Length: 340
Ligand code: LMR
Image 1 (spheres, rainbow, N blue to C red):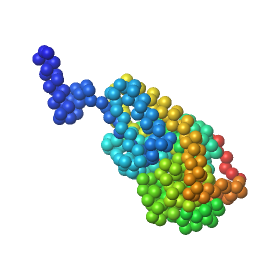
Image 2 (spheres, helix red, strand yellow):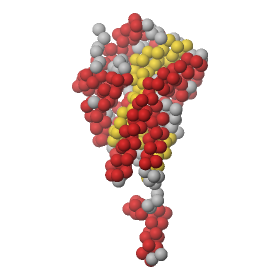
Image 3 (cartoon, rainbow, N blue to C red):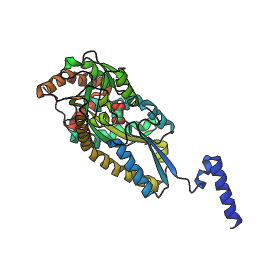
Image 4 (cartoon, rainbow, N blue to C red):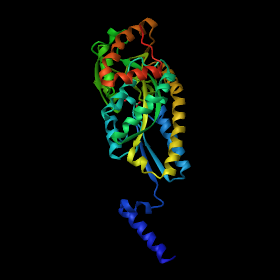
């Protein structure tokens, strides 16, 4: 071995040992690590999407990139994970769209308007259209880059008393995500909203810190919320979607050829997760039913209309916060028609 080679090896070894940023490129064997943190179970549309991304990336980069997936709030709770991403402690997240307003992009709360989406196709039309792109672009000033939208599904209400009529909500403490639209929604129903981290939900329901909540069957099943709630109303009044986001500086600093591989892997994982959303939720609903641990309430059309009458004023009430133009663009993209 020549002296030159020996010297290069020594410099590389030193750089590795000292972790000197300027010499990091000398560690030819060190993989780039992407920490992907999320708050739900691995066996959910988001959990499976994250694992598919990991598998595709690691196979296609032959180990040059390692994706470490941390589910179930193992690393961070809801609020902390976004801060950790901005600081670069994690590189990738997929928070629910209800959690972006604290970053200063309040327009994301448009996704929380009750009964906005008539079906999943309406959600896809919004996210795949111009408004969807514009909202992701607005994140850039916060040090975050929005790469894709993922889907979960329609949300249901649960509580320890049957929720069939609007009056049934009176005085109930309902856990919500940190969205002012969800806050207004619960108040319009007569409930008392309480923001709590997703990872604290099971215990909060079990100990009576809150009386109820809203989420998808997939989350109710995998977090075993049906064990600590007596009734679930298949209301489908809201929709739970996600944005896959990365630390902008990290992402843009990746070698171009690697970033292209990652982008292609994410596109495939997005298709995979989104294709699973409806079937995963239907299967979870059947499992909850089969458990016989919880009363399931289906709403009659007249009861759905009663909920809509109580909740439509929230759309107008939130115009100032979310922006009239954003709401109008969302209506158009989703094909929303205000009920009369
Ligand atoms: C919630 O906090 O209820 C959801 O955002 C959890 C999730 O990511 O599905």
